[in-house]
Image (cartoon, rainbow, N blue to C red; front, side, top):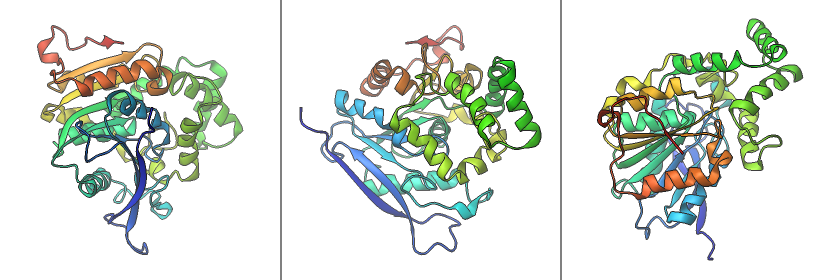
Length: 331
């Protein structure tokens, strides 16, 4: 079998509010497949964090292998191989939705794919961005996959509290003490948080795959955007996104939507259900043996579900056509 065509490049991006940077900012990206000759619209991937980088989404190359759908990966501003802004820690006026969408728009136009159209798959924080792209009716968007992306941050917090309550008492005490003191560092805390991560972020066991581990390394290397937008951890939400209710605009979505999460996901059913309830044409698939990283935990099944959704011309089934908006399609 011939090797997949791959190229990696950087493009200039004039980030709003990036005062003092010498020259334009850079967005690093990677394309698998041929954007000009493919009969399929490309799939743009939006990674999590913010700040996790693209590496942990690399299993999505399977979609090119199986369906010849070109895949576009990129490191969002503030992480990976793109321009970093450590001096912008806590700057809510800089780290905004508009910043990330402007960067995405710049990438789309630079690659010349607006007219042909494209798909978007966003995972975790990237799922939030994907939902936002759909509600704002991003020009050129044909289909969207919201993978473990909450529709409501208050409901996300409610769901994680229920998961934390199920942890062993000694682990829970360490995490609760950290909340009281505001100290989220140290070996004891990292070990306790690791228990949560191994249950609700990735259930493959340690050590995590190298590309997945890269996400945690990116966040450790430069946590600026993560701490500013979200907070110090996956279950302590103190950033500006804490009150976000994306589902309120879900009725505006005009494209077919695939909603994904795992049975043991930190992004629990309670915080993704509003997407399903209010997006007009949508299908919800829960992976029974996965947590937050179903594209690793149930890789073959995940790629089949996503590949079929992107390849079919059939309209997804939405809650308006069902007897109950709470129906979940399990894979």
